[in-house]
Image (cartoon, rainbow over all chains, first blue to last red; front, side, top):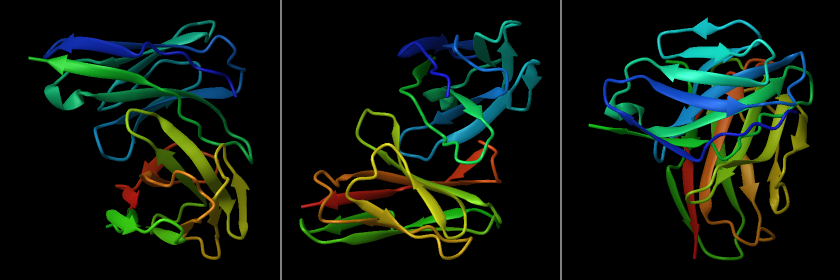
Length: 111
Length: 112
């Protein structure tokens, strides 16, 4: 599995867009990029995933560079409830593969 | 309502005792996972199972055991061989090979 690299922490003003970067320079052609977040003392929550194309859902947008070596998770209008640890994971859908979390990015949304 | 349930939320045990953490899901998911999280740290994979009667070790399986006799259930036993069992334990499930996993609310185990 490709290793992902994220900044340890970021701050964002409430109401502004939060842009969380992730580097995955060794990602293979059939590895997906997944994003999760974990609010304090809760289980992680799935946010979004993508392979090549940009993706959007009700929670966030995922922008993947054309060479697929990096991606950005965008929370368009961050709220205080978005304060959490955000995890970027590269995952290859094959039998025996395991879902492994890194250290993630602590996002602090401030009023 | 469909979901994944871990019980109990808080668990206290004396050192040297085995303890079993429950994880049940009614999502009809094939894959289930157990993670451990220590304060200020990320999740570390203990065991995972992608079909009934089959499971694989994760990165920190020593001192733990699991079973997968039913699709809905994936109990984790923390044995006395686990040197530092006090931690937050999270169970998850996903559809087949997808990484879109659903997590339980966790069990906080304290060994005294």
